[in-house]
Image (cartoon, rainbow, N blue to C red; front, side, top):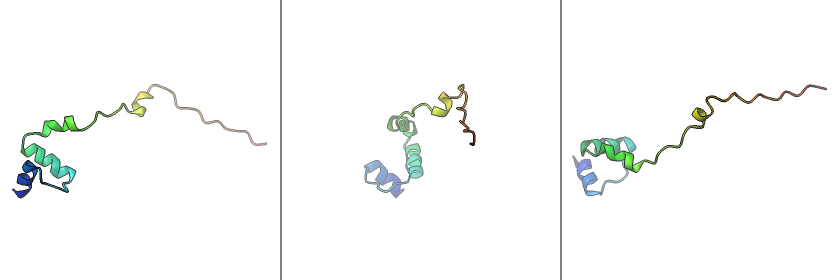
Length: 62
């Protein structure tokens, strides 16, 4: 109960991410996490999905 009280008062320090998420859930603000985290950029792997892989160049031995 002490952690929740400190969290609500803004005095909680050194929280792990899992504890922070649990506390947001307890106080009914878990949906607010979307406001805090930035939007992820599109994945380069998904963007190149339709393109062929680049062929490796093989040099002949002399």
